[in-house]
Length: 187
Image (cartoon, rainbow, N blue to C red):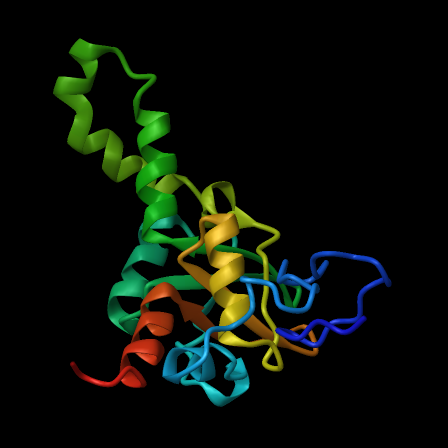
């Protein structure tokens, strides 16, 4: 049975799509709503404005990656190795994962060396050590509904969009909200 949301083929008798998790049972409450929001979330990602796919190698230090993000005005970087997408790096990865490393410092030493240690972690730690590895990806023929579902289930704020294993863009939660709000009539 083909999924009404993403078009993926599923085995007969399945209740949920194995690709996007949408309900395959007719008349389900999980189907897209009618009206402007329903038509927006059924838009193909290839027809939406996607964020820039800024790419780096995993051997770049975290501090350098943060500078690249700031200079390029992007929220995330796609981490590549030998021409293949291997991870996603966001500011959140840096903050959460580097702060975990700093928690092992003693209380007294931490007060004295906090600033220096943080600066050293940013130059010594490589992106591949703190990135989100093996990222969930989307394809241009999938819909905003699939993107919303994958973001909600995985707790992601950025998902790479790939075509033929080559990143073509990134969709963020901010992009999804922008798409939906642009099509909701003002009250």
